[in-house]
Image (tube, rainbow over all chains, first blue to last red; front, side, top):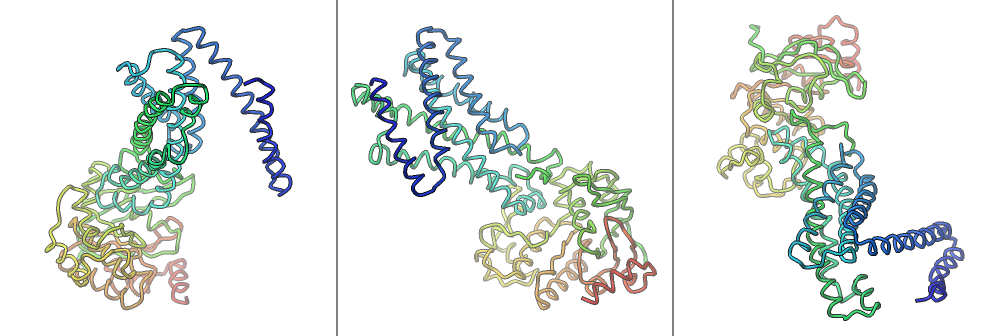
Length: 252
Length: 243
């Protein structure tokens, strides 16, 4: 694709701009900012990736993954600010997910150990894990807020913090995993996944594109399970003290 | 009246939350096997005091003794079985009446038999036909009775009651009053009962504590509610009775 043809795709930006202006939706400024940011960010990433691929050095791969984890952590922590040490808990979760998934993919030789595979797959898994963490923290904090009396009731009857928070924790874990599982049920029927579509447009064999997409889908199931479970089990103890008291000052 | 031994005692007990003083240097004791009523306006610190006795909160300073043993030396889950609490608004968990009553034993990985559950239902005056009904669908009075039955499953030596009749109609309130008196007389359970109803406090209490703005204004046998010379106490009692 040439830059001339790429510039023609800006028509897709003009349509919502005109609609927003006509219907007085007030979204023109945000649309323009989003467009400019996506152009700058993606072009920058493109050049960085080109550099890393050419350099063929593992230290650059580690640096790229570290940056992804850092950005994802800073983004997700906003939803769990009231949980003590949430930044580290999210970072640890993302590091474990990256280590487990890449360990399996590279350890079993499922993908070759080259930046062309490691970086895009890491990006997809860390990105998905970030979204799941946000979903989990949103649900977990609202579950706790709406069931303070029940948590205190279980403690008052001699229950442990783990027993007191069990229902809220499992509800939040389940709620954050459902979108991933549900979207996988209709995959290929309703929409073709982005990575697979990209490969097909780029001229790859559709069957090979499907194989890679399946790899991602299966890996996403692991990240879906691990993300919320790890953050949940790392977070709940901070809601209680050593006397098994629910820390009410923490306004979750 | 012969003063029995202390069930719970307090030494210079204070509690602050966000720099706000909730309880300020409370000294006193609750007598074993007796009913002590706690009265006072909202914000007096009564609920906070009860939650501390059950170990749900810890004092900022001062000491609490349960059977003359410092509360901090008692493992929290053991303390909470020994000192039961029926919380305000009777929180009920999703599930059947049986599941709610069995909860204290479920938390200990033990099982409550159907026969035992029916026994507890009968203790609180509920029909056994309710056993497998959804607890959340019951009336306020029935929920409160389930809440009391649930706390009895742990066989507490001390039972803390936080305004358990304030949201109930007079008939249900009277039934619960009789139930608590029976539990106290038959099982010698020490009762500490927060109430806004001065007549109820006089009727059921052996002893009464009058609290205001985080302080213990006066304590003694329950007739102090009528005979106190303390102007603040007199005004509080009059204010309540005028309502």
